[in-house]
Image 1 (cartoon, rainbow, N blue to C red):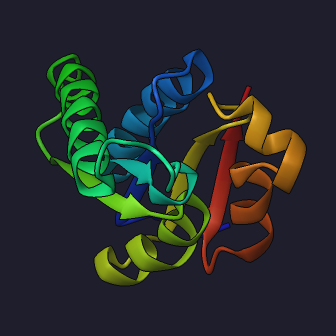
Image 2 (image 1 turned 180 degrees about the vertical axis):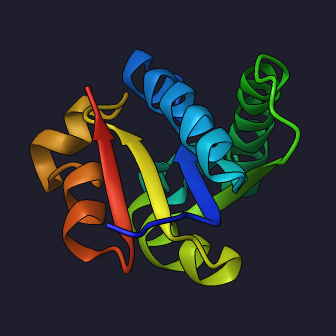
Length: 142
């Protein structure tokens, strides 16, 4: 474990566990005087290609919903050094590789379970993937 963390990432998805992870990330950021990144990833791999709605429209609608959720979470946090991040892609890869590299993340906070119960049964949980592959420490919150 590092003595001090400088860049902390909290992954949110609207689940109670993710919210709890965010609250703990805020406290860790305060203790470390760290930059807090609050991120939500729009999962682009789950869209139906056979849908009558264009994929670009579906992604835009999902991104708008993600931004709304982030703004609600963001507004409820009394911490000065925070930044919202919204991405489109595979949550596993974005949270594990892209964001840590881009923002020099040294600690990731995530909920033990999220909203993707069906995906978790089919392909394994995002949290398990990040825990096993992230280049930094990961705190899993129940």
